Amino acid sequence: MEENRLGIIVGKKHVYLSVERNRLRRLIREGFRTILKPGLGIDLIVLVRPGINKNKNHWLLLKNLFLLVNSEELGNKL
Image 1 (cartoon, one colour):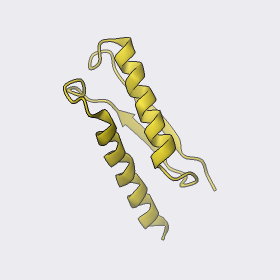
Image 2 (spheres, one colour):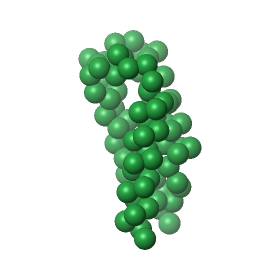
Image 3 (cartoon, one colour):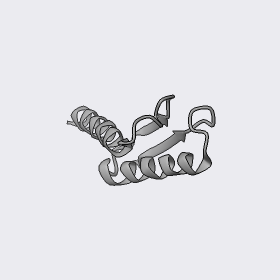
Image 4 (cartoon, helix red, strand yellow):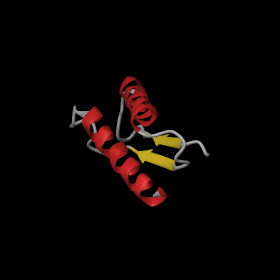
């Protein structure tokens, strides 16, 4: 049983303030930890794209992303 691994890329060009970059990183880590089932053994890289500051509902986007990854990985394991 392998661990899930997460890579996060939040560039200064897309999110100017360090407070906002760190907030996004915390939200991504929290979603990864709580939504994804442990032991899937997947490597996931999250690249924050331009325009993320315009959308204030980050948690919903992350939840959908992790649920999508989770369902695809569970489908591959069955």
